Picture 1: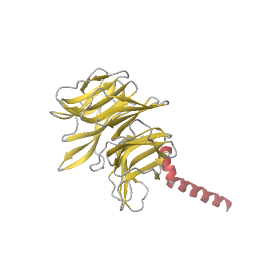
Picture 2: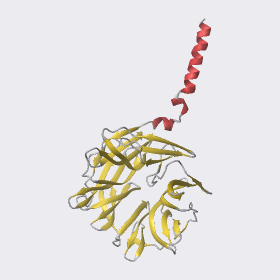
Picture 3: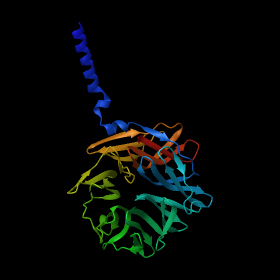
Picture 4: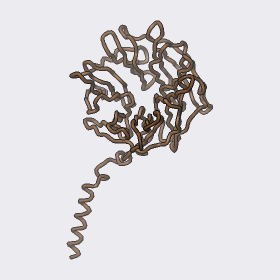
Length: 355
């Protein structure tokens, strides 16, 4: 009798192990189980979120603007690993303007600042904030990126396209290949390896900076498509996200370069804008997308040919929950965006997965 009981117990344990969800997922996936809401101090509606970047689990910065009586005011929030707080100590915090992309450059934080009609780069080090002015004023600033030893600002003035390059000591204007009309975005992995997506007289084109010149990267984009973002990684892998017009509708595509060849896929993302796409701590691509539930945010996880979806926490009386930016923060993902509660204007929201 005791022998039979032992056999039954062993069978029960084996069956439980076979069907247990914890046994079927990787450690990284087990950590990143569900999204939770993080309180954010409110700003003055309307609010606009520009960017989010994290150095690790204990430091992240989110940028944007809020509405004041005299127009937009820059908006900056810091995550310390426990809570979000408002930072108003940077130059021009109380003046009209807005903050754009935020980057980590060595031990510093660099943020693009549009201030009183001109652009500058805010730098935060252990000694506090300082500003790097641009060599000229542009009438539109399209994008900004920075890495140790280099920074770029792209935009236009009344003479056309401008690519401004900072090498740590001064600025130079860089030429682009013939036929480039304007740059829609720019990103960099190192000071000698940067990528830009451009509109040319023959259509969208991907450019690459090799430390000497900007050249056509010879990327064959899908027909009738555009580019939203380019994600270079230290491993050499590069992912392009964009949309393609096919059969009367736009659908999202992803192109991945593995060091030898490009591979194009069309995950089931509808017409999702991919500019907030990041590589998560689990190795998959993550991006926010328009939710089919008014009271919850929605995120897509793309891992090779498999795409899965997850939802943020339910929010009482919410009619629109919109994550605008994502960042990897150690073993967690952070999102930052806006939420509109019935009867009020949109304000700020943040969510975390794992950690």
